[in-house]
Image (cartoon, rainbow, N blue to C red):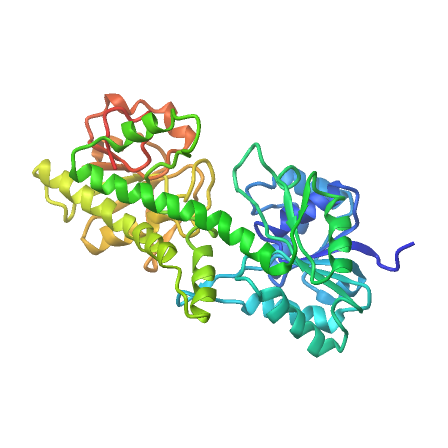
Length: 420
């Protein structure tokens, strides 16, 4: 019989931590979730989920099944496995590990022998063995790999993905030594369908960066080609659709207004940070970052050109943005290109409103952006920008309106639109 009250304690109950806690609970494990945000914990305990992939009903069922959530860290000592899923943002374009360090310090204050510590937060290679483990060892006086076990497992959450979820997405795992790896493997095999081991924590940390850098670079490539094709009067969308008929050697990526979410715009910076420490910048990745970061301004330039062709002034014009989330059919605006587009338009004196059934409100430059609650007034705008092609927009017949449309998504639904 285990000496621990909880099979797993999850630190950080956001987009990664809460789904993990829910899945572990549904797998019949005893789960404790900890978050420093007292309001978030209170809302969760009231059965109100702020995470789109977790419904209120799913959360309420897990609470009934024994999921225990608290803003008190003292219960960490009662947890056999502790999973860290805290934010790792960029501050001044540098990796900010303050939340990871804080979590490590908190763990060190409560750690007991035989516990298993797993970092899931996205970071640069070396964080587990160079940052996390030393903090815990220095404060607790315990020895990693002997008194407690540690490893890294990159999160693979894809918000809004109805096919691949926490349970059926293969899980990459690693440990600082063989015993750590085997204990971490035994834990994840209880809640994940497929577990894939790699040789060390640096390899596991690099896996996540490779996955998102791969997408980041290919998106940048197609975005740059879209700009060039527009200059050459070539239909990039027809080119992409034709190229993807090749059954081998080509994976289709599509142009867009930029990249958003916590992963693709952020993760390559972790790789760049680490390689610059050894004096070897990843020029390919940094160029991709430059291209993708430029896309919101490129979209605004195309809007300006469109208004000039219509012989309408850009300043004081009225533009409606359809969808401000960073991806289709979700309400997440983290790093959304729409925010940069709106900021640029505001700087140019444009009157901007948005319509997005998934996003309640947004602020840009400390200014609340007005939201249309329906498309009834769409005829009152000078121009419509389709930024996020939510499925719900397909219910509206855009082909019979006279307002010009600029589509940054390349959706076939907007047949009379000018595309990026």
